[in-house]
Length: 200
Picture 1: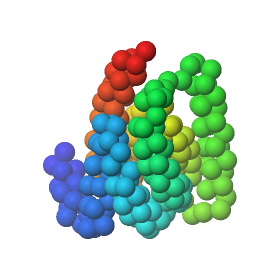
Picture 2: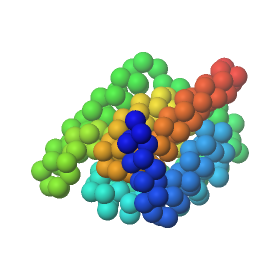
Picture 3: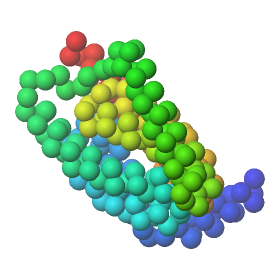
Picture 4: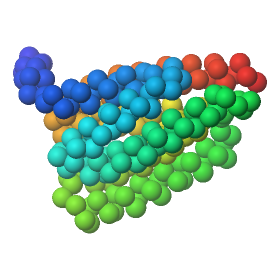
């Protein structure tokens, strides 16, 4: 245990300024999203731009490409949330079981395609794990931009998957960030669910 803590402390010392900035902005972004604060989107643009570079350097190509997608959804989410705030629509929607089943099928299909591509075309040592996490994140992020309640359940699940992956890649600060993300995502689900039920 003492060796682990010593190693953890050493890796904290070796964490780059870039990863610190990406981590802090990522934390603020997810916290604001859970609070339905529209400022999560511009902060997201900063965080994903930094992580795009960090993940590429770590040979997490699926995650690196995912940041480009996140950049696009941040712009779209910023527009969509702003528009929805000035409309008469329900602020949050929810899936039925059929839509949830379709969502899971879409995630598994994308994961298989991405995993195969990463396995065949890159030097990734975790192609299918990277592909699965990337696919789940793609779908969860889209559902967040559309203010679908279940996006938070997907984030809880995929954040838990990411934690050991980032430890494996020696991205210790990012792994710890994802522990915090898991907690925030669960609280985000509870808060959004309360808001959703209040509009029924």
